[in-house]
Image 1: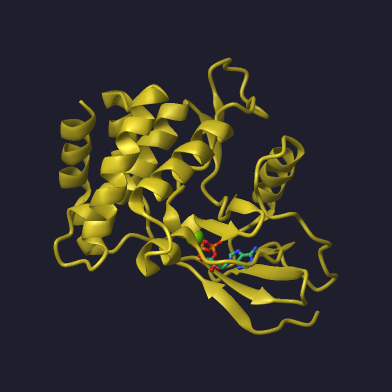
Image 2 (image 1 turned 90 degrees about the vertical axis):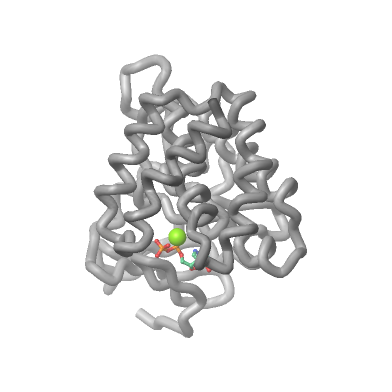
Length: 226
Ligand SMILES: Nc1ncnc2c1ncn2[C@@H]1O[C@H](COP(=O)(O)OP(=O)(O)O)[C@@H](O)[C@H]1O
Ligand SMILES: [Mg+2]
């Protein structure tokens, strides 16, 4: 299997170019990526914007995914460069959440349950020439859409309340613009916010500093969304 240069990296995966069409996404801790295949292929069938799944090379391991090579910046990069405003970013995020939550659950028998991304934030959206595409489906599960809204808001709020972060002001503007959209989708009930707090606190990828901001971040959301 020929792997090209490193195209991108996140907290858990490295993404390498394979050729013009495909990338290899590999978990650094050897996590199993196969559950994501089923979710992404299901969402693709509904026309939801996820990277296309590619042919797996013989030498691939269970922590490898071959995905469509996307071009364009992440939403975070566009917000930071000023190419995208907070209002525009918020409208895109809200649209991606609402579209995801119109798709019926794949496994759950609960009629209200939907597929949830649970990590839908500006660094997991790529702005391609064909429109925004949602990447990084590691945390995907099924449940009430309000939990997805709570997670996206909490992730932004954690950055917004960290006064030492250069991203704090931008995160605050984005969250301010996002919350009214989420209110239109049904808002963020206390129960789902509490669940989001538990999930964030249990995330091993969080730094100690980030962990300390979770409660303050949840307070900000209750205050603004309540
Ligand atoms: N299909 C893709 N095509 C091109 N670049 C990608 C693709 N998927 C991810 N990337 C790049 O790799 C980075 C990390 O990918 P991501 O799946 O979010 O990993 P992590 O789970 O570590 O956050 C992204 O921010 C993006 O820059
Ligand atoms: Mg990511």
